[in-house]
Length: 402
Image (cartoon, rainbow, N blue to C red; front, side, top):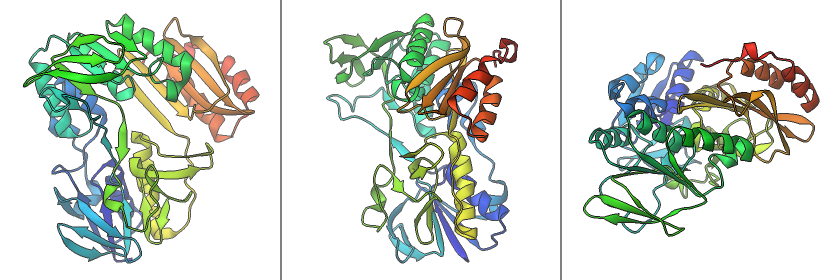
């Protein structure tokens, strides 16, 4: 290969470009990004940058070995011919020997009556966060966050740190139920309420009122909430529209094989990639910072050196309301959950999830050290009984606040 294009100036795209150089590729690398900014870190967008503790420049990532790439920013790719490995950017077509698709995902903005009023935000890009931060600095009387998932909870947490009144609206019975299950979701609901959040569960937003700025939010249960700022945190959709008609399989993302290959000479990485992970037994996308880095590097190796199965144990963390939440593995469609260290009441615990006779996932709240032991259990593919027996013997002295 002499010319490789990385489509998406994201964390995954940057990781792929760095990986190409570290794997010995000396040819031309072209990185194509829809945004005007060079790659930046997303975790601060809902936390420190939103709070004003750091500026946009502090979120920028080091290019390092990828600094010599041809960075084409503010001009998204609009079309791909997978058979010819031909990309269209700015109306012109170019052919490449290899292509990494790392276009990520975009925040979902529901079509709501009044949804175009000023003061309504999503949090996905650097400019999204900068715009929301400006509204929060104006000291609004009430912020309404729609969605109690990880981003919604982190935004709500930041607003409470700023001393703002916050209402969180969530359609599920408990926050993060799909990712963490009912027990841990209930614990996180208590964390929010104990920190002063007005948490409305089992309800959705059906209308936004006001003019020219948002003034009220109408819920499906008939409630009407005062709102000076509204944050929509209801999830993301993979950025695949530009790939329609490309010849790639698109189904909730760019569908790849278990090595990350979407088509000959074309790989995908990060939030846009949907692949069968033999470790978890799932065909899904993983929208986490850790995966973006690892899968970007893997994509580079796959292009240059051929088939290599990508089967990581998914891992993520979330800092919210003064607690650190971590999940290792996948808790979806699990059959049992058990607290093995600490207690939910103390807001310090480690819990395990079972699927069949295997350990499927581990979750911790304010207990980062025992998660190291959980990683070892996953590395050796421990059974459920082995995991419970070993973790139950771990002293609480090994846990602690981060």
